[in-house]
Length: 120
Image (cartoon, rainbow, N blue to C red; front, side):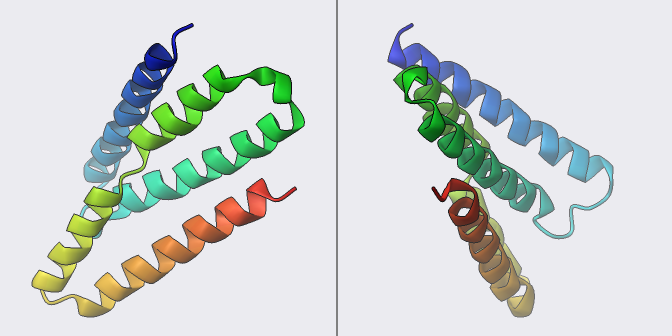
C-alpha cells in the first residue's frame, strides 16, 4: 500500500485517539492540569518503544508498518505543540511549579520509557 496512505490513516487514528483521551479527561473533571496531553505523550512513547522493539525483531515487517504506526499514529497521537502551549498557560496563570513539573516529568518519563522499551 502507498506510504502516503499509511501515514494518513495512522495520523487520523492517532488524532482521534488523542481527542478521545481529551474528552474523557474533561468528562472526568480532570481538566485543571494538562493530563490529556501527558497521557497521550506517555502512551505514544510506550507504543513507539514497543513497535520499535517488535520491528527490530521482525525486519521483514516492512516500512509500511513503521509509517502507519510510528510516523502516522504516534505523530498524530502525541503533541509537542499542545504540551508547550499548556506549559505556557500554567506559567501565565501563576503555576510555575506545575509548569516545571510538567516539563520535567513529561520529558523524563517519555524519554526514559522509550529508551527502556527500545533497547536491544
